[in-house]
Each structure stands twice: as C-alpha cells, then as structure tokens.
Length: 552
Image (cartoon, rainbow, N blue to C red):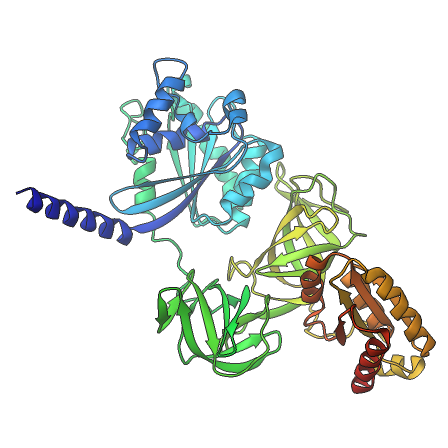
C-alpha cells in the first residue's frame, strides 16, 4: 500500500510539473512614482496566488509592525529598502495562475532610479502603472508610462491605488482616469485598462470589491489572465548574434549564442553579416545533443557547412530576411548618466554582443513630459528622454526597434568609467545615408600616392614590456621611411590615423585588453597586423613591410 501511494504521489508530481511547464508565460512590470504602492500590490498578488513559502509568510508577519501583514516586505528585501520604505533595485518575483506563469518585476519609483525601472521594463509583455489617488498623475508617472511605450510594451493597466483612503470616491476615480487617458492616447499602447484598487485591502486585485459597485467587476488578476499569449518571435526573421566561437579540437568549429528571434533549421541557407558570405546550417548543437531546429530564445551552437570567417559580434540571418547595416542612425535615448550627454565626446555602443565606438552627433529634441511636446535641446541630462543622431565607427547589424526589440535595442557606455549612461531604441537610418557612403573627399589611392604607403594598424599586446617594444618599433619603421605613430589603448584613434594613411602602432600593457582591441579592429576594412612583442625587432619590421607590400 505504501509503495502504491508513493507511485501515485510521483505521478501526481509529474503531472503537476508537466501542466506547469505547459502554462503560458507572461512577463509583467509594475511601475509608477514613489510610494504609489507597487511593492504592496505585488506582495498581495504573491500572497493570494500562493506564490510564497510558509517561512516567507511567517517572517514577514513577524517583521510587520502591526497586526496586518505589510505586503511590501515580500519584495523589498534590501535593508535600505526596509529602513526607508522604498524600492531601490529591481526585484523579480514569480507566481502562477490557472492559465499562466507570471514573472513580475517590481521597479523603483524614485527619479534617481529611473534607469532601474527601464531595465525592469525592457523585457516585459505588459505593465501595471500605479497612481496614488490622493496625489494624482505625477511627472514620474508620466515618465514611466512614456518609457513603457518606448520599450514597446503593448498592454497597460492603470491602477488607481489607495482608493480606500478616499472612501472609493467615484468622482476622484473618473477625474484621474480622464486625465491619464488624454496622456495615454498619444503613447500608442494597444490596450489601456483602468482599475480602482486598494493594494493594502485587496480590493479588485484578485477578487471583486463590494466597495466599488460602480466598477464593472473585472479584477487586475483577471485582466492578466485574459491578455493574449506573450508576443513570440517564432515567425520573425532569424537573428543569431554570435557570442563565442567554440573550437575544442581540429574537427569542431561552432558558433555559440542565443537566438534573438526566429527559427533556424538544419539545411537552412544563411548569410553571415557583415561579410555577407553565404553558407548552410550543418548542425544545431546543445548540451543535450543535436536538434533539427531551434527557436528563440534558445541558446544553441550552430555549425556551418563551409569554412566561413565568423567571430563574436557577427550576425547570422536568413538570406531572404536580412537585417540592415546602419552606421549613421537615429535613435531614442533614455539618459542614465550623472554627467550630461557630451556631443564632443566618444562613447561605446553595445549592440547584441558587439561593442562599437560611436559619436552622438546631435540631440534632435527632448521630450517634455508635462506638455507632451518635443523641445529643442543641445544635450540630455539624467532621466531625460530624447531623439538623437548617432554615428558609429562600424555599421550596426540591426533592425528598427518596432520590428525587433532584441536587435533594435542598445546601451551606451562611457569608455572612461565603463558606466552604462543610456539605453537606446533604433528608429532607422539618419538623413537617408546609404550603406558604405564615402565620408571623405580624399580616396585611399590618393593618400597612398602622396605618402608612398597605405595606412594600417599594428597591434602589440601581451606583456608589461610592450610600451618599450612599441617605441623601438616606431623608431625602426621611421628609419625605413615610413610615416608611423604610436597610440596607447585607443583603437578608435588608431583607426582614424590608419584611415589617413599612417601606420598606427596600437599597444596596451594589459594582456587582458588585447581581445577587446582586436574586436574593435575587426571588420573595419582597415588593414591590421598583430605582432608578438617578444619577437626580435628585425622580424617585426619585416612582417609589417611584407604586409604593406601585399596591401599595395
């Protein structure tokens, strides 16, 4: 009898896990201004949907000041959050309903943590924005709603919270919904739904409230259950950014990464960007074995039928649905940096798995969230949202953000501090510039004729003694009649000098930096040669001169 019960329990567990696995997944973000009740709302959802362990509930009951449960403590786990009663970092929580699994992000409301809010909303399929019924629509409420629309979230629930403190006054609810609706109509959401709630009391969250007889009876949880299935990219174009090249032995060469969108099958004809070489998929490999096909967001290793040069940052796509290559582009930016955007400086754009030096050439306008207008601006400050023109050192293999959230998004990094200073959404090409448009009136042939040489980058890296090696190599090449200059650790400057026809010796005393410099040099079209600084000087000079002869 005991064995039979154990077998039945095992079958029940397997059936439960199978049913849970088959449930639809919804990614939800909860946003709004500070103290609007976001953490309390999520805690209430977790509590009433049985998304908490018994020890978690017991701990929060002990930590709650009064007899009532402080539901915000289920998500505000940092000591600073509990001391101040605010959310600082993004907290992810999980619960399930009859129909679907929900991953919910609790985002901070403070102005200084807007960057955290944008991070939490970047992958969401739906958003809930809270409004304190006593305070009304605040600037941060508008900012969060605008960012949610920028990030392509289609469904928005506007929850007028703390209605219990105003005796569920219908006039207050109607005034706030009318005000927000006028704002939301300009943002392009597919669906906006309004709810009068009390996160602390549980009104209209999982059960209809008797205190709102004038409401239609739909609950927030019921709305979440009724939403269409999460927007899948199975039918979208294939986009596979290469993250790593696997070469464990001479007989295996695979390209690892995560499918950003679409489906790939063995035998498919694909194109490698930016080289535009064509080949076929020979195998789709995983840790558990080979697959006949794979769809986003699976992480796989692709093997190709031909020996094609593919490196980190390249994009694999179907030939009939190619991405676009944009070097001069327009984008929307949400500025995160404490320092203002400086159009005279250079930044790094991280797009998929690739870093590209870039110059934010112009701020076209900044969004005024109060007047909903586009105002002229020369720069962007912390939490500003604006449209900019960006010129990249190398083309981005991408799609407009409205077509593909994965390949249309990027971040901007300050190369001096390594801080992420902005999140961006690609709109399209700037000024109708075509791919490969010449930016200089002087051709490479004219420079070669004037200088008697072609430009190139010489990369030296790997040992602490490399600065001295670079100086000796520069002297030797100069004595050979070459126009040469030495640059420390700045690949962008080295490339600019090489474009002008000079030999640019690029070095770094940090061995780990060689890969980053090599990645920046690759795919630029500028000839480059990598030297081992431990080799003798004569051998290094000969290798460079041989490369110069080949280039000429």
